Image (cartoon, rainbow, N blue to C red; front, side):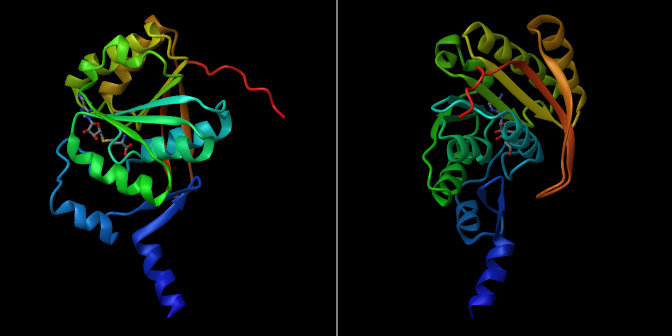
Length: 216
Ligand SMILES: C[S@@+](CC[C@H](N)C(=O)[O-])C[C@H]1O[C@@H](n2cnc3c(N)ncnc32)[C@H](O)[C@@H]1O
């Protein structure tokens, strides 16, 4: 009996970077689908989130950091920041249908994530002040998102956010944002790759840096 349960759990959830990820086939996620249908692709965990988790695993994060995950979808990147680094996290998305999924994933990981329904364009400087890190995985997939994403990054820099990390497999709209951010915001673009829990390759746009941490 025990073995059978383990096997079926494997199919409906997995562990990645210390985070429990409920898959689309998980009964709780399937239950949510009946009433909440995400409308702007926030219907799964996208691989770019793994790229940022992996990068943060290498870089680290000072304790009690305030993190804003933009275009959060199911919110697992923010959940990772809360669970692994004790960060205080807010997930922002234009589509409120993603939040029940985020809260279910957060509960499975025993963390609490604040949420805010907002488009990138509506996040003003006042909404961004006080955050140390702004992250976003797979948030620049249409030409119409170039301007909102670039200007959001620029407002975040002006608001004093220490570091901004946006990841993408390398779609043309993201490349355009990178070109502008490198030229005008002092950003850098690096290639990143993960092998587990899935093979994924992509690019990280990194603007700024978190304060150096004192190692114990
Ligand atoms: C491809 S999904 C990525 C979700 C999540 N970051 C991940 O890695 O799993 C893109 C997310 O961005 C959100 N989104 C798209 N356009 C947006 C906008 N203009 N303002 C805020 N959120 C937006 C969508 O609702 C969706 O949840």
